[in-house]
Image 1 (cartoon, helix red, strand yellow):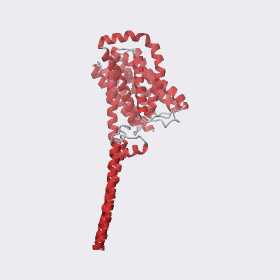
Image 2 (cartoon, helix red, strand yellow; image 1 turned 180 degrees about the horizontal axis):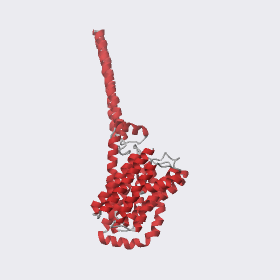
Image 3 (cartoon, rainbow, N blue to C red; image 1 turned 30 degrees about the vertical axis):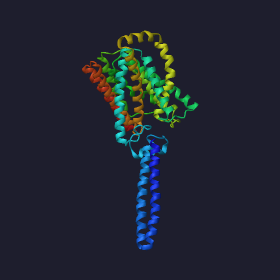
Image 4 (cartoon, one colour; image 1 turned 90 degrees about the vertical axis):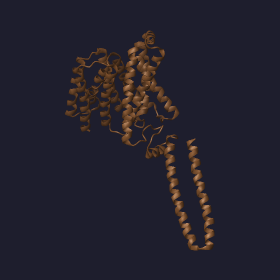
Length: 398
């Protein structure tokens, strides 16, 4: 409807120019009989007015093209026009905003979605403590979401080859392990403490990137790992919710996520045509195929009894709602994080990720009213400070 209206508006303006041309001829003929000089002045004035009208029409065309790109085709010329105009596009999200406001909006949504996900995820695990099934449903939510946006054209479909699928298999495996391990940790311990342990991910990155990628690090990077290790140790000493299985889950998640990043650099370096959001969707879909049989093996025999107990606590409708929202917000915070990464440096993103972890920890402590001892708080702060120092030291290295 918008495109049709735009076309009609432009055609009407074009007909106006035709009428002007016709009237100009009659006007010129009349005055040629009276005064040749007056006729020339009128013609020059009329041509000047025509040029002004043509400039106005050209400006309208640019405006209509920019607006049409937000509701029409997602082809690159239209996206480029939309980006030049600035604003919001249904197909490209907030990529049409200026860099500063776009980053602010995406970081705000990233933090908000992550906090809401952690609250719903932990609340669901409290009444239905089956992390393998819940993490499976969350990957399923991502898979369905991406298939829908690809099918409807909201997101451009990735061009996937057999070679790419073979290369992505180990990356998707580590992606799946990292997600389900974190979910296991959330089911056993407080959200805040799990995120403190997750802040130790740089330790695994530095230790493994050397032998596997040949990466070397400065003394400042190595020194930044000391407060991370000390902080995690201090926080664990007085953590009320501490569980060895939960602690192991967080550490396995750290290891898996680092291996995912390393294998991604090694395996997918030749497939840069696939953008971050599409790659994330593919990892979710392939990871789902890994996770379904593993979840059935690990927990399948317990789901029926667990479902009945959870329904008795909160009711079936509430349980469905919690599972649905935890899946939706899991996808949303990950998608927005990939959108936020576009157009900013990896270091800026890493700093934002560190601050995001602080926001999640504070929000979860307030929402779930987790007891926090002075030693626990000091250890958590020290670990997060170490993660920040690691980011800054890595920036200097680059």
